[in-house]
Length: 414
Ligand SMILES: Cc1cc2nc3c(=O)[nH]c(=O)nc-3n(C[C@H](O)[C@H](O)[C@H](O)COP(=O)(O)O)c2cc1C
Image 1 (cartoon, rainbow, N blue to C red):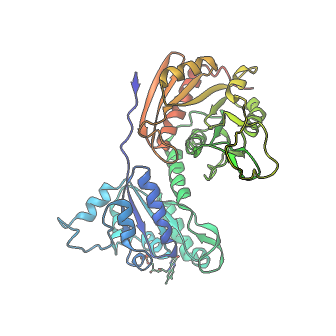
Image 2: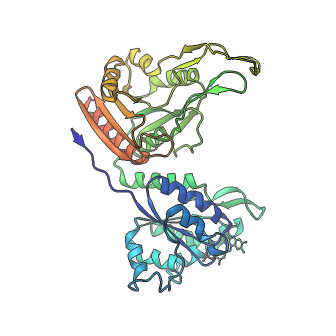
Image 3: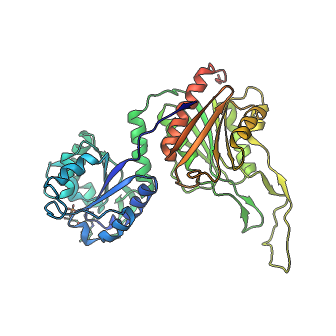
């Protein structure tokens, strides 16, 4: 069986400069460490006025660095050079107008700017400042200069600012910063192996209402489906993403359709299926839904109550039974004999591929936990070992593209 090797987890320097948005960087660092990355935080002297190093030290397990000339940290007098070489990605968030100016003009007057001059890692800035500072021609010229040098600039976003003004200058939200970096990398690295292919993806949980305030749902975060959509888009596909209730930003260039219940998800899929070449059914759709939704909130009462549930429609099986189905990719999550269950499901539901993950395995986690998949098709299988959902999604889309092309694109819709 083919086993695919993946690059080790990444090493990031997160730089923090002096702005109010520095408080949001703690959340950013938490997202990165939970993805399995090693993070070294470097603060400017001004950043120390806004945030405490201890917060970042607790989140990363590493002492925070801020001084260029620190005999304690310079074991051989050259540690800033080693740190710059160690990093695979430098992200400065928030990036102040001042740090942007210093970088644009090649200054190396503190540890953070010196690292940026020494490194050959990717550098990304997430600016945050008052809207007039951002719109000032000096800042705009500096940003344009940095962009021309290949530095990625994310944001700033529009909105209400800490100073009470409204306009461009808010730091992009931490989750969106990380996703933008992933999207940028996918665009610059990936080959357009799915040009003009239309891909329909479902993601996230569904919610089945019990009464006006209660519902049944599951732990699906939608992250895998959103990452699949992002990579499919980056590989040249036209992507439609039907998703249940999630809190994730829609990947750039992807058409999103938000639904709530299993029934709404089924209807949205049946509406779109005729216009797609590949259908990836990743949503955790409820298998059962309450027979009736109470019109009023169900009151507390003594003793037990029972809820009568009926089966929801099996979306992918219905699509497979239709005329001229697209290339079908299903998912299976099982706690028992995963592979034989998945192989049965592949055959029984007439799928082209199935991606199975074992509930309870380390890393079979929900949310932003890493994951592993066992992918099966008619006469083959591949294990995609434990890694972040983002790189797993990229591997899976490549595999789907490969199989889709090998099958002679027999499903291609005219
Ligand atoms: C309360 C306060 C908030 C500030 N917020 C910002 C900000 O959001 N963005 C910015 O570019 N500068 C802001 N500044 C100004 C920077 O802190 C100042 O330009 C500093 O020199 C930046 O240093 P650094 O780039 O080395 O971190 C703020 C200053 C104060 C006093």
